[in-house]
Length: 422
Image 1 (cartoon, rainbow, N blue to C red):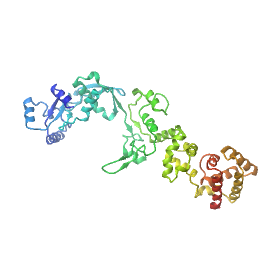
Image 2: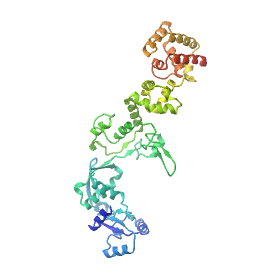
Image 3: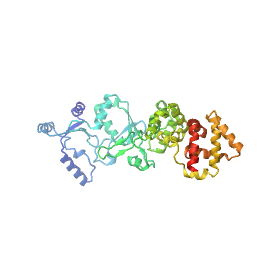
Image 4: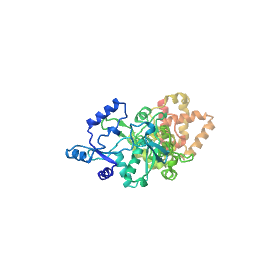
């Protein structure tokens, strides 16, 4: 970077600036008093026109200096007098922008390059074809173009593309961490621990979002594939992506849509994959996972995964497959359990004991046939049956549940419900 800075100085595009922090502070105070734009430019750029003798004298005296770019602009001019030029942007087309209007620091006194200077040098040396970044970087585009021109690198200047901002879910203003805190969604990809305050900010990974879902969700913020397709794999996104389909305006961060994407990608994943992701959730809830086969876990997942948006939510939907109910939902007991229910449940137990094939369809046929034959109310009997086995009136198909639990566990749960509810 020092070599490239020296090249600019030697060719008259940059200069060593010996202004101290105190002198710069005085300049800013005068500019404020005169209601002038702040910065080092025009008459305020006191080191710009030093003679070689003055520069050598300052160096011999050990004065600290930075390297500044000689700007073509002048902030002291009226708006209609400022020289402008065009910057081509792959998303926004031809941009009419003012020439950079102040002498920007390229090398700090420590010899470390500033971001913008390093950016241009790196992009040139690495033959970068596109510079894609957020629209908040638009004001720096003239500076980068100015540097490419100063070096004579116009022919290798990359294509600029300034992406739209991510806006608050309501659409008014740029998305911030506070929006996530306010509405309860993560804004960081990974959980962030602030080293200064100790504050912890949730991350998409730790919140249970699948990587594929987050990528798909983010890809459609400010871009569209040119059709109505929403669910796209990485290969599809690569194939369909084109900068010309990026929006110029900001994109509202619809976090609820992100949740929808996660739900859809859970459905897309195989039951076997989700079962493996479910194991840590089970362990966290005190379940000894070693007692259950992968086949059993996969079957459980297949019955309930359509009801969840996150893998961690599977526990609330499937806990009864691992832990027998100790209590029963009061509202369901009041609605589904009558004086006759214990007697009917006793009859049901006898019917279940006589079933040889306890798999879902054969068991269902027998029980439905018995209910019809006895003239019982189908909804009352089946809901009481579900309440006894699950603990509340929810869950997948009843006979898919009993097939997995097995005959003995099903009978024990009905007997316990009769004893507890009475």
